[in-house]
Picture 1 (cartoon, rainbow, N blue to C red):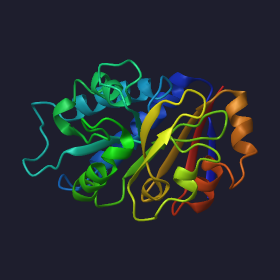
Picture 2 (picture 1 turned 90 degrees about the vertical axis):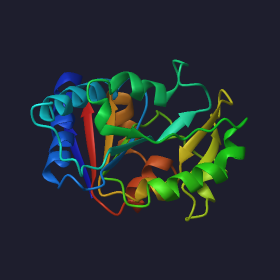
Picture 3 (picture 1 turned 135 degrees about the horizontal axis):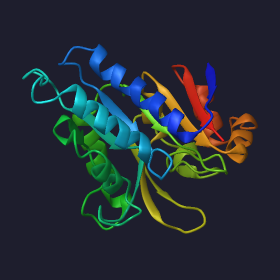
Picture 4 (picture 1 turned 180 degrees about the vertical axis):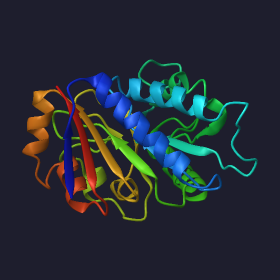
Length: 233
């Protein structure tokens, strides 16, 4: 089921999601294997900085998490095939956002040192099978004005014809031809929660008109859990 929540501004939206996120982490036993798939980009970056501060404050040196605590796994929903130092790198963005609480996170990379994403699929699939063999606690998604999410683009055969057992797919941006690695359609759906963050009237209209032929529409229609949409103008 789709739950649409509107907020007056990005600051309110940011605070709401960060508090919700922290609540998920502290509500479970310390040994619970939390994992989160995160969208990149400028819109969710303030959310990541806010949860970083909240988590650092929650688990200070005076009140550390248990010695049996498992690290909280993070992974990008998709990543451009560039170094972390590149401004377009999502993994680089996460490293710059999660600084105060860095000891509590384990960032699982969607990249290898291979020349292109297609060559790296076997290695990344094996990595995710070993390190993320449980449903995500939450998947945080963005959406483009063409209805794409992660790097699942409209009419791209990579997600339309994927094997349901695969964890990741190689993708090309349809306009720029930029090489990317994306979590697969089926892996994004293997989650307890789906959170979609969008801003502006244009993206709201795209979402409202989305059909199952678009990646975001197909993801919502196929979700095994409720889909929460967080929107502000």
